[in-house]
Image 1 (tube, rainbow, N blue to C red):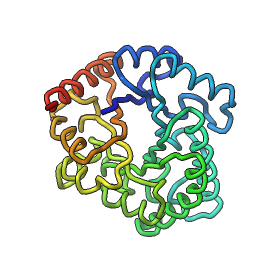
Image 2: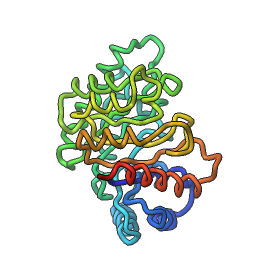
Image 3: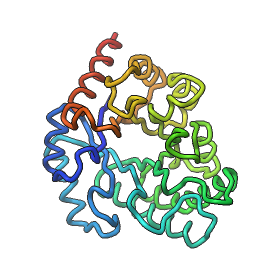
Length: 274
């Protein structure tokens, strides 16, 4: 099972230094938030893209893909019932798909609650259709770049749109493309009525990407969530994607979170070995 970590926890540290540290911790890959590279993904030159990809490769890392896709942007919104906003959002997601491919990545994780929460007067069903309209426009670029867009359900405490894995799958099915699938996150799944292993099993055919964290917002092993049954289920469903550590609460310190999260995951995997 390939393990990665999300880069935004390292703040404004230079990417080469981040890559070196992440590789030193033992991760196989790194997941990038576009706002850590530039305010506008469209402004990232071909030279800069090649440089980032080369630096990751030199460190021995694979760039997994991108997440926090619309964070720190203006004028983009997934569920707005306005054609011009939908078109602009779809166009920007297309640019991100090309950026992802240029960096060697294969997945776009679509979370970003602040750019998809329900707007006044817009119900959930209408928002679903708005989001589907946006994502259908992006499909040709996803096919062209061979990038998968993985829709991420979020816990009710985080956002009010797509609060369950079943709703995220329903949106993906409305789009109707194999390039649009599902991202599961442990913190988000912990808010659902059924267990995380049950959710993984139920949605195994749509699962494209996986975020590992504790319901307390820290890394795996920093709370009460036992990852052994989670990793066991991922193996049982023959999940072949990445498991990326994503952390929100940095109180224990970035270095400690990065090191101990992978150490804990590796310990769990070792205990599951035949």
